[in-house]
Image 1 (cartoon, protein in one colour):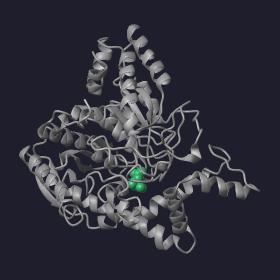
Image 2: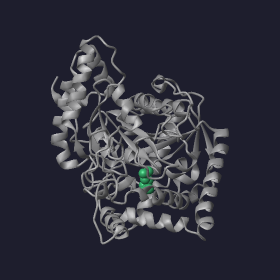
Image 3: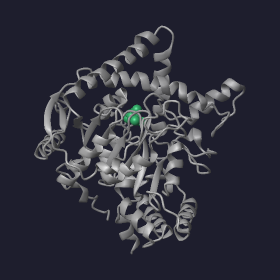
Image 4: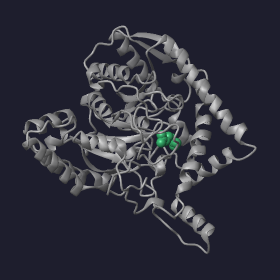
Length: 490
Ligand code: GLN
């Protein structure tokens, strides 16, 4: 097979071919590495390509096959990893100058599980610095470009992982989602992007942004691939105290099933002011398609969701201000020596962190300070509880909640950089499920007149990723969107 043809295969097909000996994992890896060399010159989705490590892993897979061992469910399948996931012996920077030169001595739990399943880690992907942002423009190393239109943002903060998946530089990718960072770039780049329930995937080795919200999730071109990856990375890990012992389901087994009788909740407010007309139209068409497939459509409301943005921008910066205190020039990465210890802390942090990270640290420190703690932080936590109760009420009437993923399609690079509030608005639909800790997936749900992908977000009950996979896969089959690729991409 030509290397172009290899890169066009799904991860499921690649695993099958590698397991049967049709192609070797080394051949597959070389094909993807070659593709990265060509494509990433324009897209800048990768901060680091680990050709040597990837080929060594691939050789291990090939040796195991020759020895007659049973191969894992992702054997020989190339994966791109967001650069806030620790990778043993491979630089991990969170796209921040403050972590320049940091090489972790261990793998994140999710990365360890992928390796055990035979996946080949080809490199580390670009992101907004410390996962703070919605466009990738907060990367200290320059933004990623959207494979559908290189003048546009890929979304953020996991924009590199989304762009790498959309442009077939890896079969799938991992990202992290605190308030939308898997789903929103997934929507902007036209791929499936799933944020699991809080606690479903271990956060061990994920460099913390906001610990009560962070979750690792997969990007893939199809729902089936995302489902397989979720089965691999999910599960209890004693090294993360918030990781659950709830049993992991066979998510892939949900693919190909019928959805007749499932109840889909539609939030009328999510199709109102501030949402692009084309996004509204696509969402309505998706509702009609699900009805055609036999789903029952019900109206639900999330009355407190309008406060999600305000609550998130208190809680997430508050947690970040505490988590990022560890970057002080002593233990990791950059050190700018000053006259004394305090001066060294100050200059290191002032030079090492970019403007958005500094803004969040200041906001968070303020919200947690004496006198403001009750007024801001505690209030925001109460709003969080009210949002969770809204979902409890909604899930009495429906099995999944459908909204757009983002109010717009991919915006132009530079369009929102001078207005942080406008940038924060990109996450109005992804924030409520995050605050409630619920699983949510973004899937391609149509295209704008200028050919940009539109994302649909489905939110499920806690630990019910199964139903999300089932509905997403049924919609994917019925919609026919799966075959759409960015024009320059095979
Ligand atoms: N865009 C949101 C933010 O800037 C969400 C980020 C994320 O999920 N990591 O905080």
